[in-house]
Image (cartoon, rainbow, N blue to C red):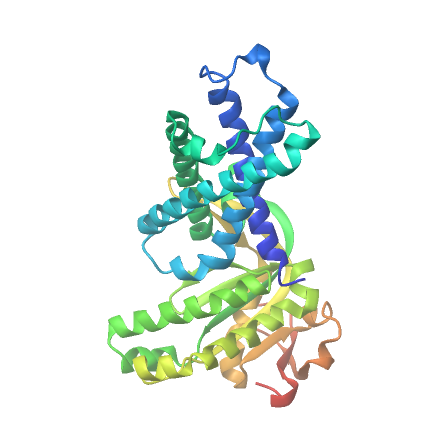
Length: 363
């Protein structure tokens, strides 16, 4: 159930967008075009119809977006993805109409919620000029919703919504878990491969571990070269030890793709990471190009912990502060103290621990 929560949230957001779009259509368009005289409208049945259509369409679209199209379109060009999804969602529109007519005949009409349910209603609908009007609106709203969803994906989890509502227009202090993760021996690999192959390797690597970020309720703060910075809020990061689970899930995914990497690049990428938790300042930065940035000692410390992986020859290091938040960690992971360190550029010392899977000891 925990793994399904991110998908349920995504589908719910799509359903909400369709409810808004459908109510807007029914109120601003449907009533203003002489299909129905406003003084003769049964608003109970009217809004029931609008919301029911939106729910069916939104759920179908959400399932299509989250479970069917997510991986198939993720590497396609931005514009092509929007057009293809819009076309497929229009097909879903026809399916929605069919399902609604079935519900109307079998449930709504017998209960008296709607006044009529003519025979062959679907055939009548698609062969009348009214279909062109509704179909055109479905195409337009599908295009708009798909555009919003694609922009949301490009910007990262929750960034678009936070920018729209201005949540971080003024700096805010929040608690976060932050992981800095990058490729091991990236300089050697860059020398071994030509620039295009090296860039392709990094692109494949980030693509492959993307699913593990979603599965563990994380979000990407930024990509810098061969490095990715992953964030969790405290609750989601410590739940099921998600911030640790992400690392080993990503490792598992890369190993499953070992034949692909060996055939394409002659190597299998390895990576290291440092994780820390604490208070950060979150705010909007930039002028014409804006984004949400995270500042503070917690961010800097997480980066320094990642650097210590090289010195200690460890794959995953976490801070004592983060370890104190995690529960039942010993059941799954082998944790070993590495001692107290004075990290570069840091005034205070910090306790570091290496973490490995039980069957593999430390990494």
